[in-house]
Length: 193
Image 1 (tube, helix red, strand yellow):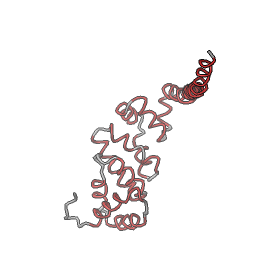
Image 2 (image 1 turned 45 degrees about the vertical axis):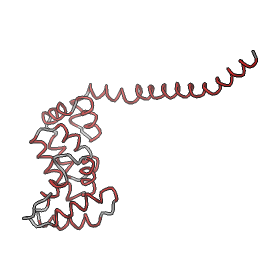
Image 3 (image 1 turned 120 degrees about the vertical axis):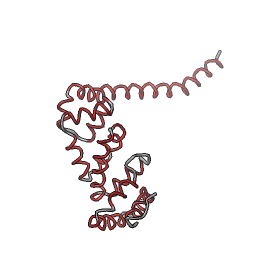
Image 4 (image 1 turned 90 degrees about the horizontal axis):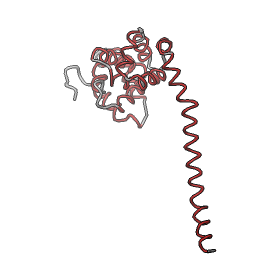
């Protein structure tokens, strides 16, 4: 009998802390979701019109998550916020550049073309951020070849862009930087692969 008691207490003290921490963490995760994340989503659902007038990249990402990309892009164009988004991406701000893959994923062709032109403008201002996003989304229609290829025709901006790219020393985008420099320094008659 004593042997069974020791065996029980031994396993009890081994298993109990694991069960206890699992229960505590699951309750904490559930509490965090119900206290912080869910009210944000509910608030967003109730105030969507207001959200479209005060868009930030974080709000836009949340709208895409809740409503889906197509519905969000349609609503943005309906509330005339599309130009606001394009202007912010063109400024080269990292938070706005980071939202472009989500927009590209769901955008119809005319909007993808607008985003491509906007990414070219952003490339002149913040090449590091644009190349990083393009490196993460290689199968995008706005790949490095397309963006850097289109950027090579504006000769004045091209020289400045080449200097900016040469001054970037980031290991995360070494390959993309090299590809973009090759494309920019190629003659206009060369084919880009």
